[in-house]
Length: 245
Image: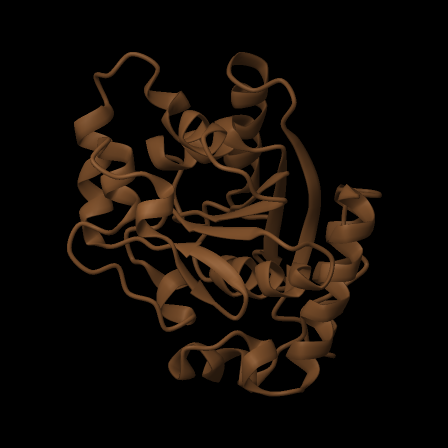
């Protein structure tokens, strides 16, 4: 099962969700791989992992390394880290035949129960590769007045990839993030549920300071502190497991 965490809008909790969901799913699966497809490399850094030298997902795309060559383990999951060199990969592969299928072919060579892919906040070739390789998409959405801003373009891209490159692709759910008990958050959540009826996760990720602190300690929320963020991602892991098992 390959799950992509994606939204073209930045700051919605993609990396926080990718990291903590991957660790949460360790309760149900033995072999989990977290792939960092963002040149900013935040997913790896979140778990205290940095891609040194040529040991990055960029080198796997370039064909000089394989996934097993670059993975590092943290909190019981394997991580395929990124670094800034991934930013140049789109230019390198743009003229290649089958350029959208590179990641899919890479993942065919490995055996994991679940692969979680953290994507950049864009709809470029890296994101299209992730969607082409994926079974499911989780879309984090901030609970604010601009909750659905940019989603129309993103969903058109998902539909285009589904119709031309990956007919098995589907949306696993919309995840409300940064939720608090204000009228704005409540209204945004109700609007999300109304617009995407039956597709919004029951789990809501509440605002939590410890979720912001955990990356600085190089840990998931599960390795950092028991708190609301811990509880929310624990529930999300259970809900995702029930949906995909």
